[in-house]
Amino acid sequence: MNSSLFDTKRFKPFSFAITVPMIMLLLIGIITLYSTSISPTEESTDLSIVMKQLLYIAIGALFYFFLTYTDLSYLKHWQVAGGIYLATIGLLCATLAFGPEIANVKRWLIIGGIQVQPSEIAKLSVILVTSAVFSYKEKYNELILFLISFVLVIPIVALIYIQPSGSMATLVLMIWFVTAFLGLNNPLRNTALLMIIGGITGSFVISSITSNPLWFLLSVPSIVLAIFGFYSKNNWKSFVLVSVILSIVLGVSSQFVWNDILKDYQRKRIEAFLNPEETKEDIGFNVNQSRIAIGSGQIFGKGFGNGTQSKRNFLPEYQTDFIFASYAEEFGLIGSLILFFLYGVIIITAYLTAIKFSKDTMFSLICAGIGTKILFEVFINIGTNLGVIPATGIPLPMISAGGTSIIVTLSSLGILQNIYSKGSSKLRTGKKDILEVYEE
Image 1 (cartoon, helix red, strand yellow):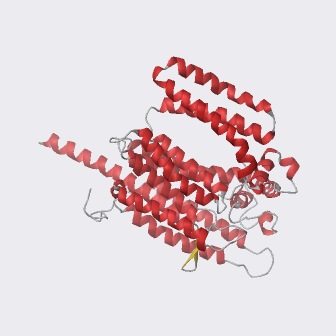
Image 2: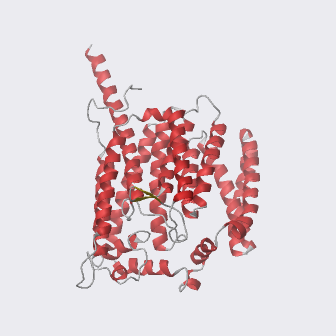
């Protein structure tokens, strides 16, 4: 590890698969925000949200370049990872204690006149801390590390949930799980156990929500897989038994969670998702208006500045949660496919970089975690706009208006760029060494 925090000897090789899609997505976001800000009448157009977004992008760009040239190997020191963790806990506690109450929730801190959302920061912190924990795989048992990372993430999830922000808490937990899951050995066994737990737990959860016991049939494939794994692999027996017991415990507790833990608005969102036709005039209104906007864009869209759903306030939150609907209305299916392609390039690059660093657990998990974070955010936001998942308040990365989301996303990509560059430098150094040996 270098004694200096920064590597300033030479510029590292940049990945165009990260920088080009990133810049294009930021431009699309600005164009969409500008388009939705244009007044349909002769009145003056309010561009304040566009100017704020440009400021956030400038700040995010500084973080991007800073983290691109930072020596990330310092994260392997528990003091550094511990500092990130405690800072995240501190911000979340400060939000609950001192944050302004907006729409009956406390999710933001006002720092220097700027709204900061610590739960967005928590998503990246969980990736870095979990990856740092699993960097000790060679010294400690992986299951112990998995348990440690789980214990560490619970306070973060709990603090986010009581803001309240159930969707963000669930997303943070999902990001942690995928990152930690990928840090475990024996992926075949782990995938089988995950299918067992998912199938049995899912049957309990859906039965609790719908009050229909027929959903328990979903557990049949999982039970068959559990029996097969138990008798075909001797070293799987204890893991299968634990997974079955755990899934039953989680499933039974789902009734309690549904009735006593979830807020009314959270249950209504899920009910609107399962029965959209019965809730058109209630909680399902937002999603239905979003689907109307997306459908009206057709193949090529209505054109820049010609969206009617957002202009006439039929589409709620058209610059944040439902900005994809605003974009799809004006740029149609073609524009949407371009958006998917750009996100896909970044996500695939993240996973390919993770594979390249498979021998370095921490760097590999950081890349996989960042790819998973962006994948989940895109899937959840667009899924909400299309009505294929319950409505949530997850922003669309680099597109939705929001300062913390932009800065954290660009910071994540700066870290990804840093690790990619480290891999490219190693490959170039290796080729040079081979050439020198050959010449000698």
